[in-house]
Image 1: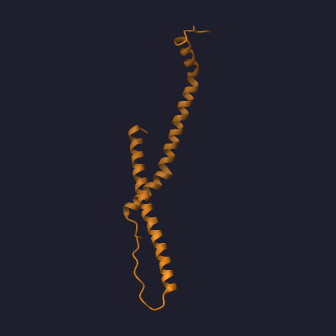
Image 2: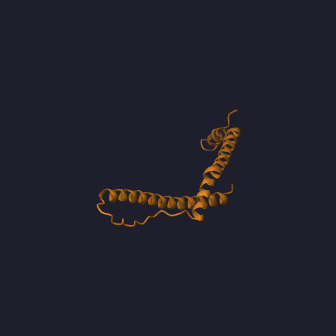
Image 3: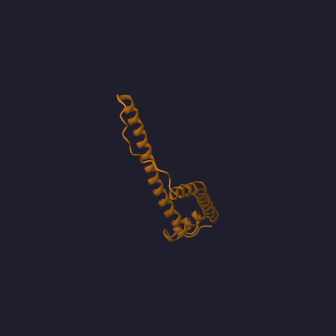
Length: 125
């Protein structure tokens, strides 16, 4: 992947994750609100002595929008397809670079270069 594509994918992923965390916060808040409403209703039923009408409670629960569904689909795409392919590509590139360093005998060349140019030693056969 080119650097710009990697940066674009990273920025997109960060945006999606931020938006998804916002959605999760709203969903979890609605879930907590629903549990609190259920507990209040149970307490009202236990303490109710006459047939007064129960107070109407507001709920934060709402249906998911098309944008939220799209973000969910995008997040699952990143999780299941993009990240493994980038990871695989990254691992292949690192393996190739490591193999090239090992085959080029860089450590020995660096040792000889330092010995010759820094310490002034002549090259030994």
